[in-house]
Length: 97
Ligand SMILES: [Zn+2]
Image (cartoon, rainbow, N blue to C red):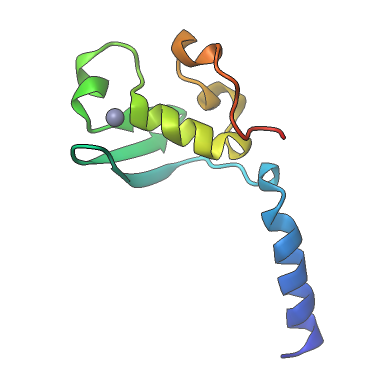
């Protein structure tokens, strides 16, 4: 392996420890929930989920969206990091520490 590639790999290792360098603009996921698999996505600042709770309540969120917000918090714009007041009181798990 040439030294240029070694340097890139070392840089990648450093970057991987700094998730705040990455900004997720959109994504599509399959979320393996307790009862079923759901399609959870982020597009144009709007979260979506195919689960019943997301579509039947006007909360704009569900457990799957909130879980992804916690997982990805350092890489999300602040206005999509939390959906509603329901999550505002929670510690941003893993966000900035
Ligand atoms: Zn859901």
